[in-house]
Length: 284
Length: 334
Image 1 (cartoon, rainbow over the protein chains, first blue to last red):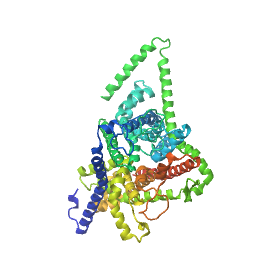
Image 2 (cartoon, chains in turn red, brown):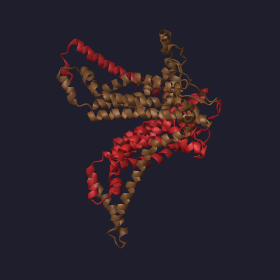
Image 3 (cartoon, chains in turn red, green):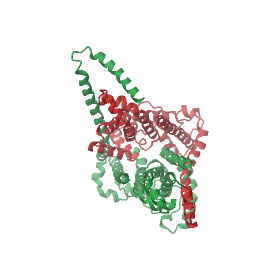
Image 4 (cartoon, chains in turn purple, cyan):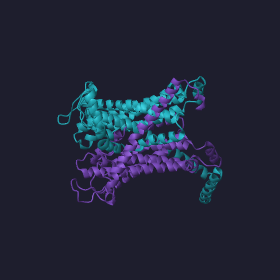
């Protein structure tokens, strides 16, 4: 490849070389923020991460001699993501089955696909406003349910679109073989197609969970925040992401420190889920 | 091997089902009926799920409109170009927030587009060896996985203090330009734009990269055969061929920038008002929603915020539909 360009005029050589350098330079510029973000979070978060931070409640503002932690926020995040997964995984996977196995290229399926794509690009804050209109206003209370519902709307398109792709990648000959043995649509889909596409479906579910765990905008006015333990799904709940947002703007430096520790914790959760999904995908 | 697995699970389930069917009189008909009912039920179940999923955007528009109605009825369309936002006097206008959203997203696009395209070229054309290309593509994708609130936290405590000397420099040297004529004090429209640029970069890079990869090798080989160098081929042949994908990626990035909430809210300063200086703090539609929603009690205030959310949703809907159209147009041509 390179030999083909060996006898070049100096001006062409200079142009080629400078453009290559420029492209490489711009790529490196793009990676500076990534490195800086990781470095800041590890260097500022790690010193404040301890057993207390993982097991204790947030200390009242201004008190420095009591144990300070965000255990309630970890529980809140896990609980709300679990609610979201329980709604969005079945709905998203069934939608994907319809699109790939039954609807295919029909007008209705194309319409659903377009709508789901539109939903996947909707701003997460608008999804929060939607959950506020559906749950918070009628029940006159901020709640973990409302937060979980908002996250489920956010996860639904991610699950549906990615699952459809992995279902479509199952070779049609396997569906034919199953039908030839006398299996109907339901059995073929559940026993053959889903079984074959399972790693892809798990990957899409894990990616959606990773995305939902880090979301803040849909939670700030649906689940709000709470200084105490999660007692009821019908009451406000703390979450790691809202804790970071609230404590980042706090005038107390120990709350800022806690925000960094929570950011490290959240980043670990999100990255582990992400890497896990890549690992499952590579098992295919 | 795939075949060996499928019949074995099939036969085991056939065994269990036939053992229950034996007790029934018309054993021949029932499994068939059950399959038919089961299939019909299963098909309908997936259909209903698809219907619900497809209807969600309609519900979003309908329910937000319902709760926005007090504000829509009172202010109507002039809401979009009124400047005042006064909770005590119940006067609401969207212009400062619309302005902030558009300006910050535009700054982000101007900064992220050249870098995103450069990454797409570097990671798709054979400019660099694969062992450099793959890590760059992976790391850029990784930016998209970082939660927005974490980028905001970094933006507040690390990036804003680090970039402020540069803002001071812009003010001192280029203060005569209307876009740099206010004294910077940290949070600003410019900082928000740069943070947004970092966040939309993976979108632009990934979609442009796909556009470059979709171009057939014949086109490149043709250009090489005519004596073009590698970068001449990229600039005069592949880039024009990939242009609709690049613009589609840029439009999708614009849509993301308009809707991005947390990181922007944390670094933009949250001052309502229209100031053409990029060094002055501002406010966007998502940032005012994030700031005021949890404390809004008055139905008209909630309605005005809902109205803003509706406007934001419709804007991003338009921008994203355009992006999807552009990207589909490309794939049909390739």
